[in-house]
Length: 447
Image (cartoon, rainbow, N blue to C red):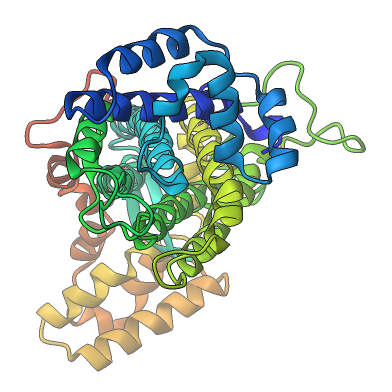
């Protein structure tokens, strides 16, 4: 992963130093369990911990050994023996390389999940704050990109909050799915390593034991994990796309924060572009792309092959580092989003009241007019309003067929904007909990 889209904590998790430290801990915990079972001397297990815990693993030295032996775990064990000495012969008793590799990957993905969950929590907090801030700020709802009926900007943000709350639940499940330990030996039969050793290592590392691991942890778990990351990324792209549309010059209802020294274009000094949102859309495409190779990794030969290995060396760090960066960027974007309630109000009235046509349609049917005739009458006047012949309300009042069913005062009532917001509190109660209220909530016409 390139540094431009990486944050320190997640990046450090995938460093060689972190990996080798986890490898050592797996081997050392296994040695402790072996010592308790009388397989190796307790003094040897103590020495392994004593020397290994203080050691600095030399990634360059391990790479040099691997160039000769062509095997990364053997290279590590050889280097470990250089650091520990004679007692290193008791390391890795009855274990196979995948016991170390898959258990380490489970630890790394579990820790990565914890970072991602914290990221989602930060985004949820920002969305909740801004949702209550604009709970009653009117804006136009759009379908197919076209004006539909009024909503509030707070309801719009509450919808994103609910989506990322679901994303959080999916991440929790994905973490549980991936957090399994496999210390079962060459083909997973425990012939040379007791299940008690696996259970001990799993407990020490905060993992569950893999029920049947063959020689590896089944890759359907990993497929589910990376697919979940892809779904979260898709939600990020939906949020970013919404902001991009709202920032368009013709819409102008919200825009990304633009700092004092920021430049928008090398050629056009006036530009303030939605570059953060566009970046999020691009990053989401990358995270989604990792789901496909993860699913293809499910199909391995017999008890194992290593066709999955090279794939996971790419996708595990790249997917988690990229999503971590994107979630953090999204939280900051929402927190600093500049919102223009006056422009929202102006856009609502842009079409001369056309957004109230649905209420007029229903009112006519309730007065005894057939639905077909009601639709025809309202659509006819709506098309005239669209053509610039006047405001919809005035055209409806002047239509004798409509006048036979609706009085002018009744038509006026059908154009009451607040009607559309009568259930906003109920929506917020569903999303944020009954009685939810935050001090930053503002009146509906303020920004």
